[in-house]
Picture (cartoon, one colour):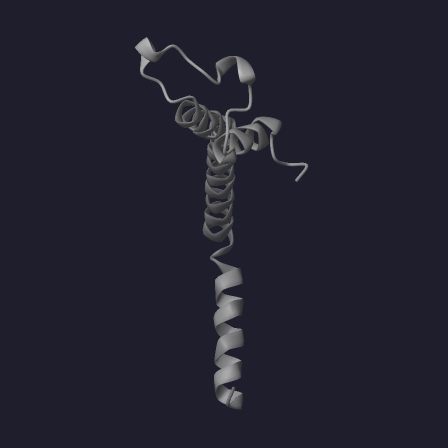
Length: 104
């Protein structure tokens, strides 16, 4: 619960309320044609949705950093394999072959 932004909790509370939370806005002018409760529920949905935008941006930044890190590691491994004739792959294949000759 600590990781949830306060605005998410506020937005959900607005959306789930069964009556307007603020008396001042309970009776809007009829000329506006607004239902106070549905307006409040929509506001809660907007608050909830927009509070998730920073989380999505952080997630995207982390994904791009992870991808870049994996690409660097792959290039590093490829250069090492080019230098030593891919000894790691040869050792792994030899290990698999030894398992095959022993019967698993």
